[in-house]
Length: 167
Image 1 (cartoon, rainbow, N blue to C red):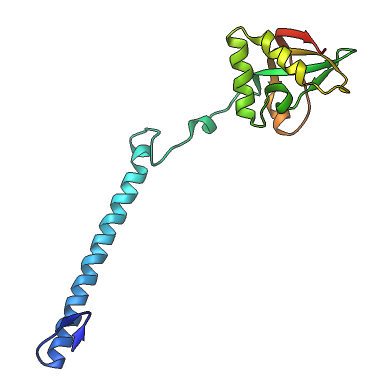
Image 2 (image 1 turned 180 degrees about the vertical axis):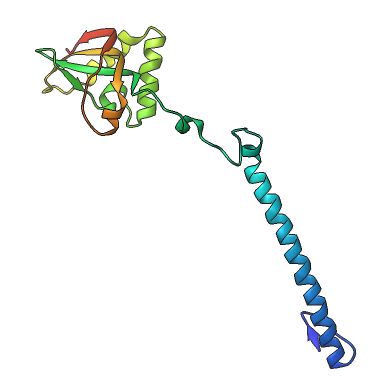
């Protein structure tokens, strides 16, 4: 009789009993091992909470756990029409990208490095010919993040770092 590539010797009943006994021991041993592994996994998973540490594998995400201010100061580029009304520019025009994080960091870096005027001129060159925008402002805008998250268009107070005309 062949069992999984191994040849069993002895009487058929004896071999079957021995095989079933070995399987029971093996299954019970695996079950205990599985229980031990599960307990170890759960302990590792909750250990940061037990130690009051924000870490892998369990993170309490403190950036979402606390109340935040309803306003934020963001680096931005705003277009203005001839009466001076603000117009939100696309990320493609304002920072030559479609990624909001890259746009924000590009504008902020330009302001911090004293290169807001160069950015302003580059943005002015990207304004379409038939646009009502006649000048550009680069700077820090205080925005209502709650309104922004709801899709409400509001312009906040602007601390202008550079201003330039469009063509």
